[in-house]
Amino acid sequence: MKSAVVSLALLLLLYPFIFAGPFYWDIGVTFLLAAISASAWNIVGGYAGQVSVGHSMFFGMGAYAPLLFYQLWGLPPAAGVPAGIIISVLLALAIGMPTFRLRGHYFSMATIAIAELIRIFFGTWDLVGAAIGLQGPAVGRAWWDLSFRSELPYYYIFLAVLALVLYATFEVARSRFGYYLRAIKAGERAARSLGVPVRATKLKALMLSAAFTSIAGSLYSIKTGFIDPESGFGILVSVQMVIIAALGGAGTLFGPLVGALILVPLQTATNTWFGGGGSGLTYILYGAVILLLARFEPGGMHELWYRAAPRLMRRLHAA
Amino acid sequence: MLLLQVIVGGLLLGAIYALFSSGLTLIWGMMNFINFAHGEFVMLGMYVALVVVMWLGGGPATFGLAAAFALFVLGVAVYLSLIRHVMRGPMLAQILSTFGLALLLRYTAFWMFSANFVSLPQTSLSGTLNVAGILMPIPQLVSGAAAITLTVALHLLLTRTTVGSQLLAVAEDRHAAMLMGIRPDRMQALAWGLAAGSAGIAGALMAISYPWSPSVGETFGLTAFVVVTLGGFGSVPGAMLAGLIIGLIQALSAYWLGPVYKDIVVYALFAALLWLRPQGLMGKV
Image (cartoon, rainbow over all chains, first blue to last red; front, side, top):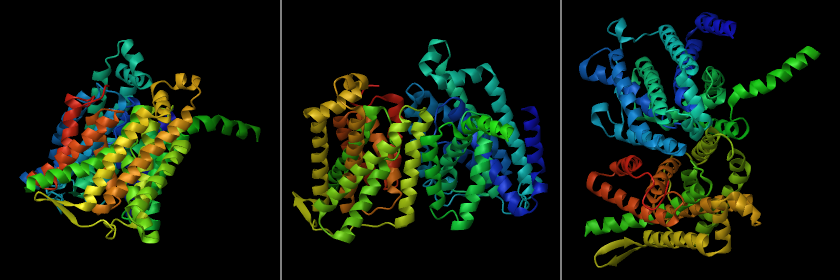
């Protein structure tokens, strides 16, 4: 396990040198961002089993805050990151408080409806640029604007954040809090009867997840220097987090990483083949993948591997 | 007078909301299962209406029935091939299954019909009725009346017939129903057919008077959630009342605040409901 983690870390650190050039760096950055968001979703959606399909609300808040700070006060975008986190955590509290009293489905529905509410609302609100959205500094005034021409600095910033998210998830998973989360996922009533503070635990998980998702949104908008309601709060933003985590294995530490490793190259390939994200084919594929996954392999690739690996090993030994 | 007309228009649209939401509430109440693709069923009903009119011609009766039938078949097929298998699985699989289905249907529609808004050619229903100074377009009047009739019919089917009793028996206690010689699988497939069929015919009824694009499914799906939450899960009369209320609220907020706010008000109402009365008007948690 330890050696696998070290070699994975080395691989990610050296990736820009193994695959040099803007094209590969761009894929690398996209991969890291997808892995960060999906790992953040994984805390509440995977470990606690509370399936949010509206995590774009936290992503969007995190994405809007930096560019709003820049537009309103000319501050460096990164200064808005804490504000995005605070708003997202408060939002998580506002959604979690009422819905976590109820059974699981309510939470999923509430998240999708509220994300949609925020998206429409931001589309009409002039302060945040309404339907057009917000722009960051076209050319960085100094290094602290974090506006680089090369993808390389972003790659390492994102990698650092991913390491942070994964480390936090690892610490959560092995703490008492992490056991509470898994107990709730396995059976809420049983967990409660054993004295697990169910509501408070779910709420904490959602807040933590919201904070990290918000950071992912901030990274996105600081890098692209642009945000609009659809790319911040759109349903496809949430979909991507869910599908990546579920594909790799929801509720496992490296599941989201595996999911992103499969989906991001696939997405790049379909976009190149079918031309642009505008054609719906990528999303038809998303839908089909989600559906088949739910039907045949709800545990994700993670579980598939655990089933397939022993057989594979036996065959290797036999040969 | 204009206000009165807005109210009538809102109620007529609300009647259609009531129809497709009663399909969602049926599934929810019966199987404790949320169909995230329900709005897409409505959207497909609209396109079925369009395709039938383009190819075969015929009036609202023809394409309405065609949409109901096509979606009934789809509903049964979705149950048998997908839902039956994920129903007893983990929650993540349950949510992902219909969520994936929704994406698949929505973007397939995008791909086949493009993102442009379309509308049905003028049907045999046209003109307006002038009742004491309130102008009511006949197409909307007919589709509203049809929607209410069908919702009542669905309610009567569930409460007054043998099949309905069997459906409700499965909902109440699957095992006890099996002991009484009812096949739960068959009943649940029927429920999915009825739910999707009511969504399909609701879509066809709406297609008579409103233009649409593939993305309306998302809006209708959320509208149905709000209606079902307001009306109480599993309650068809609740969905009927709530559908009318939501239609009315939408029309009034569009009239007083502007058209962009009609969805904002409804979703905000949903958020408020979750805080204050999650069991809805006529439901129990």
